[in-house]
Image 1: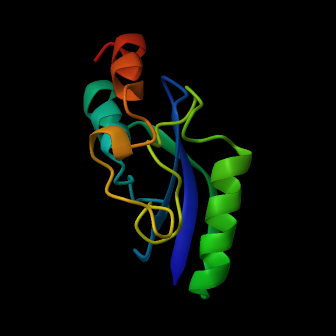
Image 2 (image 1 turned 135 degrees about the vertical axis):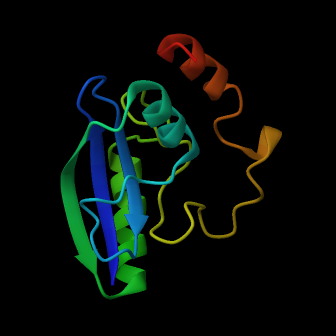
Length: 118
């Protein structure tokens, strides 16, 4: 079973869209790099806004990529995602490594850090 979820920090309002196969997606905090740093700085006081359950990897991947694009989770300052969610490993199929210039958010993290107090 694969779960996709949206978490939101209660104090800052920052959101995170992720995937897990853990039995309880409501207690799972999320694993995104920027999201985990945010929780470390501002605390783990979060809400689980939405959860979707999938038993088919292809359907999960399709939903995750469409949700990522529709909600602009990579470019928006309201989301902690540094790359689109795909229901597997967060990378788009066939994408190169996420280091330096290959990362679609190259330079974005510096901007995020300034606006978020990092």
